[in-house]
Length: 206
Length: 206
DNA sequence: TAGATTGTTAATCGATTAACAATC
DNA sequence: TAGATTGTTAATCGATTAACAATC
Image (tube, chains in turn brown, cyan, green, purple):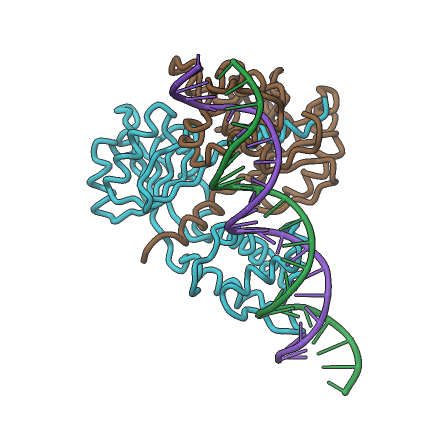
């Protein structure tokens, strides 16, 4: 991975990984740019172009060996070790995330949950004891946690974000419906179901 | 909204709406392409270009009147009436979505929940009785529901999708970590937290 | 009117695609 | 070897940006 890879390509790699993992589970050993393209609605040329950024990952005439390509993509995306994550907010979303089983086999695990509600602090969610927001910075630092999932209400999201930044968190998955201001070395991705629904709405008829 | 607006622009309109709503709530009456751009990390030129697709929505020298622009964007995105949605799957994610309070003021409400587990059917989630998947097609048709949120396991997602299509659903928000095959008149958006986390992972240091 | 900011055109930039040589 | 599919170059396409005239 030499030069600067465009972000748009990096964003597609997890999708490739998702398809490849499914194909592998189905017992397939090789795949083609054509097959990957059909699964993801992308052109075969684009798949090849994307993958060629990282070396010669396929074999001419044969296609791509699935196991090898998965391994390679995991390396590129730095997914070889399971990363610890903190969930901020012990509401419904935080709860669902803490219980979500799809993380571990994709490189992540929730190790900490923080909430500011005294009624929740000390209770357990899937074996994880909810900790006080007051201790958050310290705990994140001590455990060297770099990834956080933000599920607080919009009003407190920016304030919490500043604490996360202070604690050394470098990646934030933001479920609060508000844009976060962060320093350039901190990366944020948004998940806002209403945004997607509103986009879908445009394409509805009536 | 005459010609064909590029999908990439449509996808940004909900973000504009989100910022505008926040500014309005903060008591602001006018905004500038500069301000919107700073909030969303987009250039002012892009904001103006996007909005100009739909007519002259601003006033030269003055900027954009927030209330008017919100109204206009709601029209464009067909958000003027609250749309009914079905949640498929009564697990943690389905449960969190049914209880999510952010939908109504953004144009949507969950009216139905379906699950195949006899232990869940008939129980209530936030006042909504969980219905049997066996009745799904009929109920969706009877209620003319066009939007569904899919939260089943990956294995059953494609099968359920085919039922949704059969029932006349035209927009699917897919939480299952798998690509769905749908006819061209059905639109799908994906929410897969692991995909975003994997992208974020690339930008982490070690 | 002067000052400000939009709307819009033209230029730039970057991403996608087509096409084919390389090679398994 | 012949057939197939990648890797890669060049062409195309589309999106973003710069710049400025229009106009409030």
